[in-house]
Picture (spheres, rainbow, N blue to C red):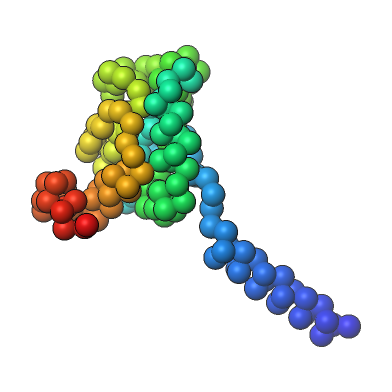
Length: 163
C-alpha cells in the first residue's frame, strides 16, 4: 500500500510539472506599484507600468491583443515586475506615496492612454511610450530593455538586428 501511495505522489508531481510546461501562465502577474518598486530593488528586474482607462478603446485593444499574447505574458512574467494602473482612478495605487492612480498618472506626466512606462530597477524612468503597441513591437521593446541593449544601441538598430 505504501508503494502505491509513493507512486501516486510521484505521478501527481510529474503531472503538475508537465501541466506547467504545457500550459504556462496565461495572465500577466500584475502586482502593486509599491511591491514592484520594492521587489525590483531586490531582484534587479525592470518595472513595466501600464496606464489605462476603462473608456479607452485602444487600452482595451492593448489589453486584449498585445497583453494577452502568450509570448508577451511569459516574457513579462519572467523578466519584469508589471503594474496595471487605471489613470482615472481615485483609489490608492501607492500606499507608500499615498497616491491614487490619477495622481500617479500626473507624476509620470501621462498625456493619453494607453501609456507604457518602463522603470529601471532603482525606479528611474527609462522609457515612456504612449499609445497602442502591437505585440511584435512590444515584445521587441521588452527584449531591448531586458537585455540592456539600450546601453549599446538605439531601438531601430536593435530592431534591424533582430529581424
